Structure formats: C-alpha cells, structure tokens
Image (cartoon, rainbow, N blue to C red; front, side, top):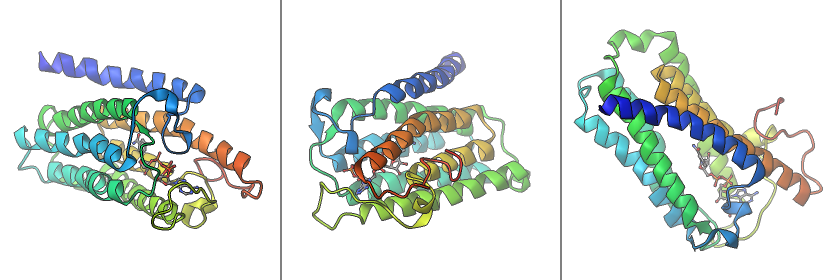
Length: 253
Ligand code: NDP
C-alpha cells in the first residue's frame, strides 16, 4: 500500500516539475528582487528560509532513523551529504541573509514546505527503506565517484556564490542591488543556482535513483526560469552589466 502511494507521489513530482517550469516562464516567484505585495501576507526572509528549509533537514533524518539501512556505510554517506547541504541552508544561510524585512510571501513558504517534505520523504524512504542495500563496492562505482564529485563541486560553487552575493550589501544595508563579481559570476549571472543544480544532479548520479532524478529535475525546473529572469533583470537595470556573461550555464545559456 505505501509503495503504491510512494510511486504516485514520485510520478507527481515529475509532473509538478513540468508545471512549475512552464509557470515560472510567465510569473516570477514573488520573493527577493521579484517580491510583490499582490501575493498576500509577507514575512521576514530569515524566518521564511528557516521554516521552509527545516523540513528538508528533518524529514530525511526521520526516515533514516526509522529505516532499515542504518548499518550501511553508503547510506550513512548519503545522509551526511544531504545533511551537510541542508544544515548549511537551514541553520547558517537563513540567518546570514541581508534582505528587506517582510518581503517573503507566506504562500511561497507553504509551497516550499510541502515540496521539501515530499522531497525528503521520497528520497529518504527510498534510500533508507525501499532501495536494495547499496554494497560497500558502490563506493568504487564510477557513478558514486562522479556523482559525489559533482555534488561537492556544486556545494562549493553554491556557497561561495551566495557568500559573494551577501557581501554586496554592507551589514544593515537591505535594499541595494549591485553587480556581482568574482568566482563563477565571471561567466554567469546565477552561479548559486548553477551550483545547486550541480549538487542535485550529482546526487541523482551518486544515488542512481528515481527520487534523486526527480529532485534534480525539479531543481532545474525551478531555478532555470528564475536564472533567465535574473539575467534579464541585471541587463535592464545595469547599463554597464558585463555583456559576455550568460544566465545559468557558462558559455551556453
Ligand atoms: P538570489 O540569488 O536571488 O538571492 C540570494 C541572496 O543574495 C538574497 O539575500 C538576495 O537579496 C541577495 N542578492 C541577490 N542578488 C543580489 C545583488 N545583485 N546585490 C545584492 N544582493 C543580492 O537567490 P535565492 O534567494 O533565489 O536562493 C537562495 C539560495 O537557495 C540559493 O543558494 C539557491 O540555489 C537556493 N535555492 C534552491 C532551490 C531549489 O529548488 N533547490 C530553490 C530556490 C533557491 P534579496 O532577497 O533582497 O533579493
């Protein structure tokens, strides 16, 4: 019974990704530079990020501890990768943000909580319960080695890019936008999104799993349209914006 519901939810995530991808080409998710008063009640971005990301941190841990793979070294490595990312996003990134107060719509928070809970369940339940045991030999498999390498590279790019963005504003400054430079900003306007996409693509390869793929597809569907909007926004708002910079993928897009 649970497996049937699981499979329906997994297919739903692929369908939702397609809907989100199309929708976001017409409407920018209304937070950050695209925030809007038309989306109802808005709260402090620090609180919003914390409560949105916490389920992603917590739900997978829950499924790890009630699962049947606690002795598996590969499973332990997978949970460590996930927790490394979501600990940073939930407990560090959220509190370092330098954004305007009360600009994050509760509606977006609700959607993100639902997504993070579903995604944590799909990945956690598969990896730590439904999946066949990953043998220790998986650690030498090219899929694991390539996948985790991409994941780590993406993690570094994501964190460093968010660090550069954050430091465009002085402490206490909240409204200003400036042109970012340094790191992968040399090539693209949204390297934080590029790093995030690398992470979950790496995750999909390392876990070689459908829920991993669903997460990578959703991340692309969610972030690619926004990266394109961000790029257009920079070009419209900064006449001196570097013309050779792409939106999301160096030299390509
Ligand atoms: P943004 O790049 O839009 O913003 C990141 C932070 O930097 C915000 O605090 C923003 O302020 C500030 N900032 C951005 N550009 C500038 C600028 N030019 N000058 C000054 N400050 C700037 O990222 P998101 O908020 O969309 O995402 C945050 C993190 O969450 C990223 O690492 C992203 O990869 C990840 N994420 C992952 C998703 C997924 O599907 N897996 C979905 C969404 C995000 P302000 O808010 O005021 O604009």
